[in-house]
Image (cartoon, rainbow, N blue to C red; front, side, top):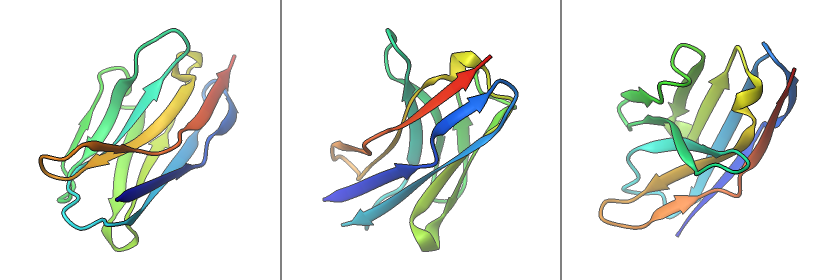
Length: 116
């Protein structure tokens, strides 16, 4: 069993920045990649960014150049630094991970609201 807890969401004006954190606990051995997803009102949940245990990253086209994903393996924590925020970034952001051949684990989500 793996528990994921997100934090750092909130209200921000367009053009601003926000940093999200996700701390993993429990049976965390064998965890490899970790990622961030988001779900906006009326839309499907979508991938934002993923990072491997070795630091390799992949970003959705919509956030490239604006968001940065990173991790601290010693703290079992993954971060999402969000800059140049737009109203269309408004969504609930979820942390995600999985073990090899196992089901995904999800955090409870943290709300990010960007106003214009």
